[in-house]
Length: 442
Image (tube, rainbow, N blue to C red):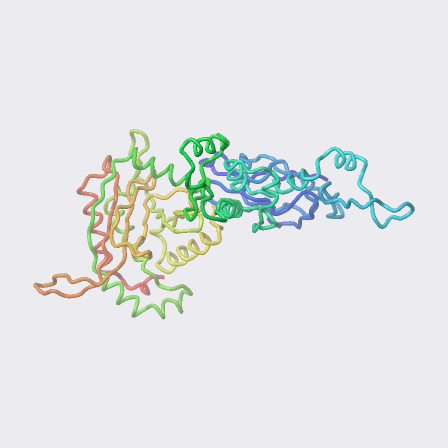
């Protein structure tokens, strides 16, 4: 019986999604729980597994299609016994069947009529058009590539699909001059102008040889990041306060306890759990830093959901450690480690990225010494931490070398005054400079 394949229910904040790529074609057999298609939202890439085994009989929406929550995008026949499907007309053998034999099955009458009425290059062109990835299709259209030329592009994508990189490489090789400029030295300006006039008006200008360019559309995640950053800058009164922290105490603790910590808890003792603990301690003292703006209201949150900025192949994402105040350092380290792995594998869920009352971003892992982080709406504050470097500092009238880290707290000045911002950052500094042993927690 036919089974409808629907877009999974998306979160309230996600209105639509894009079908990235189908992993199965019409007529192919599908096992239960096998991934059918990748669906990109503005937060995550979802895999849509087959609910039952069967034959994928129809695909309603192809690669690059915009879809909504619950929309039917394909049909699957759960009672079909074979994965065989009729060969496309372009792939059917042209050798006529020998009378009285069944070794070579002839084309159907419909296929013969279609083949007879279609120019020879068309089937190949149509097949190659179908294998173009969405970004590659847009690039080919912008460059006014003809169907025959598209048919000659070498494909490198999965399943023989042509990617935007394939199109760019083809265009670069096409535009690369094979000989020096053929224009005679005696050519006049009018001759050059006449030659230019013969160029198609709609043709996009091509970069000079050796100066390649490529244009690619933003992913949904990148577009969403851009939208939220602009929203943050235009709707909040962002101000940043700075301080520095001596990391010697934390580094000494890590050196002393890292082996026992990993042995007892099965996870490495990193720095981020110390920053999460310090942030929670400060937020408890200054609740306004953990609040958010809703119209003309200030919403005070009685819980501490800390977002941790994580770099992924698709861009920056901020999964949330919920109820961080109730977790031990070992549990926090496990959450952060899990977020990093799933971000790399594209396995974060919408729930992982929803909510959050305060965020922490660590530019130090990339070598950043100082920055002003941007708020993650609707949150009202974000902590930026940076690379820990040995620097000369004054202690008790003497210059000593200490591992120092600059802290940056960006906050929404609409509801957070400078006093609360500065004092909350000082509270984080103190919690970091006088850390408790991670082995004293359960």
